[in-house]
Image (cartoon, rainbow, N blue to C red; front, top):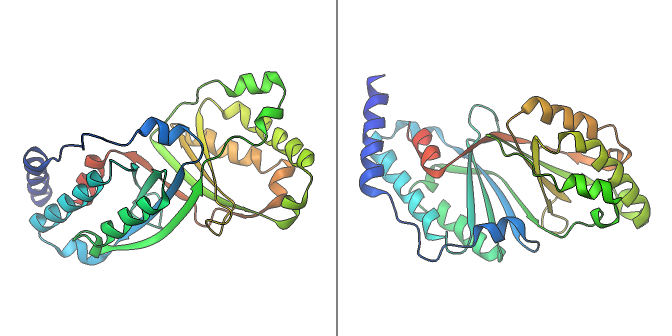
Length: 262
């Protein structure tokens, strides 16, 4: 307990004296998170046991370097941070990175792993996708399209589920796929307000076809959503669903650093 109080005190001093100023020309976060044609990368990391053997001052110094690397790239990419520890056995934390050029994301991750903190990290999963305009929504009935315009609520919980379709799905005519996606959307509609969703197309960029990202304050409704989607015809074409499924909580960079410093 005394050690934890000491570490928290040191961390507070570090935040006050070493907090870094964001670059003057930060990337347009709103544009990167809403427009099509943006690359999304989900990078999950596990912290090795040697990290816990370091002195508190050394951990703080290494985390200062972590913050420095992240802030250095804020001009080119938008970075969101998540704590997975305690909710996922795959990794300790997750970074979601949006960029107009995937090479910028690559260089950021190379520099992160090459930093003093990065020496204690093992990359558990790196999922790459691309945002695109909706393929099927334009053909939906007007009432359904209007219902989809209702804003979805964000929440403290985040879930990432990659999906791979079977060959039969891609061989289906466009109209049959559209009909099944309308059924999919209608099944998801009761949860549209409480579960925020974002889709990334991954075919050719990863071993999956899609990466689905969710945020919610109500995990019970997210659970019901997944059960409802598992009953529609489109779900029969899921060759792989999850594996890995990443579950964590949304944290600011400083909040994440405070936990990792312990």
